[in-house]
Length: 122
Image 1 (tube, rainbow, N blue to C red):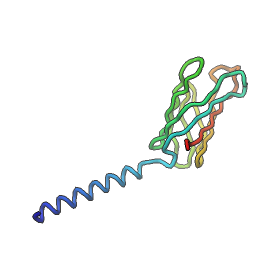
Image 2 (image 1 turned 180 degrees about the horizontal axis):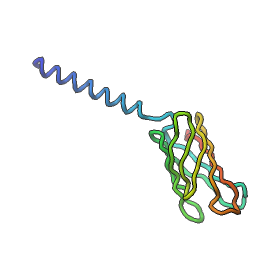
Image 3 (image 1 turned 90 degrees about the vertical axis):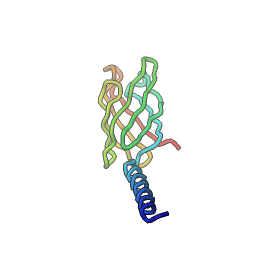
Image 4 (image 1 turned 135 degrees about the horizontal axis):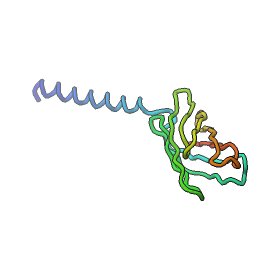
């Protein structure tokens, strides 16, 4: 190999390393698969469990219940605080370690405030 080829090869390796490090640094501390459980103050209103994905501090999931599907989406800040939406309502809370909690307004007044617990999948 001539000197120019060697320089190009080392340059390509260095660039690949920077891209890999940059991707790893973009990942958030909560990235991964989680399980969410929703429930309401009134136990007669249905809630349930559903899978949630966190990637690059973005939360996404879909709850499929008796009365339809409800999208979950939002963002986790550096301090673990969470803000997003669940169905048509606002959802806010906090992630810490392998757990998280949030609250949201009820889809119907009779249900009372909604609560959601998150747990990192094992």
